[in-house]
Length: 270
Image 1: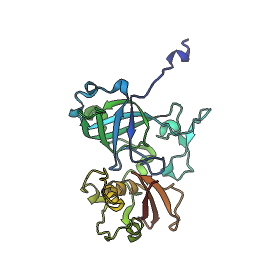
Image 2: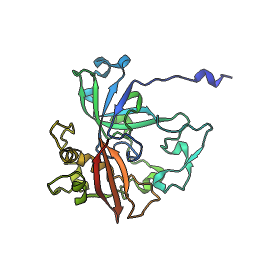
Image 3: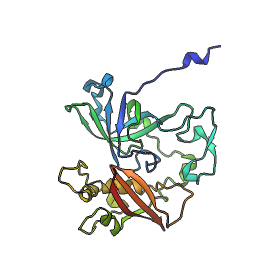
Image 4: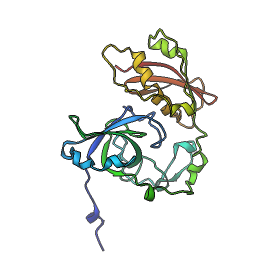
């Protein structure tokens, strides 16, 4: 009989992701649901433009990555509690995408926005829809191949109960947000679920003379897309509770009432 240890492998990161999420809270629970941008930067040993030759012909990528911020379990846990089921119902770990897995590997499908082949750190891949925390190690990248990877008329198990997006929230900006950013102009833009896709994708790079409010306006369409996915624990429904998350250099505070998420304040991270 073959010793299982003969099949042990050692893997090392080929890249890291630069994302707007410095911590776990607020990260979308699945890839491709929100419109947040991120950049994939290769480690020196794999930093070759030849390694991405032909990638420009694809629209999506598969990322294989590690749950680097998770506590490792010393023993195998066969069941987990998916957040969308309220946090109490247990499912088999291999019937879920829980981060608490024997080998701690994640799989995400992301959309390619651009591939920089000339910059100092080239190649750098800019993607949309990544559900990865900033600095997450990436172990492999593969192209998404529609004829093989797309399966129509398939079942999604327990996820079918919410796959239609019934959990999604309307996101609005309270006037108090602009007061917290010392902005003299009243907010006049409101993005619904349909208009999020049409919102401007302006660069969020802050210029030296740009105010915090101006910078925040640039990231607002992406932030609203993320918040519409309802980052709260599924068992918390207190409309008076103020939640906080960090996004793209800002501490963002919000509350949820009657299906609407209110962004109440924000300030630049120290």
